[in-house]
Image (cartoon, rainbow, N blue to C red; front, side, top):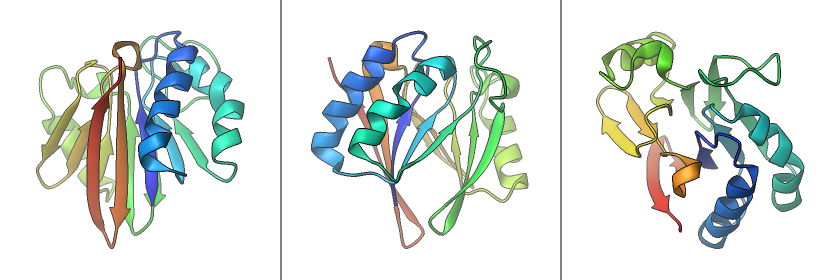
Length: 161
């Protein structure tokens, strides 16, 4: 299972398109796209474009602290991904700018081994009992790639200019 990780596009739908085109050269087809908020409307806008590359991909997005549209976007998701579970959030509800402990505890309580978040605009990978990943901000040219094979995650965090 392969996924592209996006966050904090803040109105930059064109940036999502550009970064995904760059990533596709390295990833080939992917199974899922995750957007960790602050750009939920951007993610909705680019889904048809992304589907031209990956027609059968799944799309998972959460609401960030700056997302007021579209309505109905959840603040948290628990997503089965291959043989693991992923917890998805923007991160502001867990004070990720100060600590990752609260996010790690929540993800673990939900039975997840991976937590995806945004909010800080900084790419990060932290391995404790839960692997916590932040792809960084689309606005800064940042995107992430997650592959899970036989329960083992492989992560790449890229910066395209």
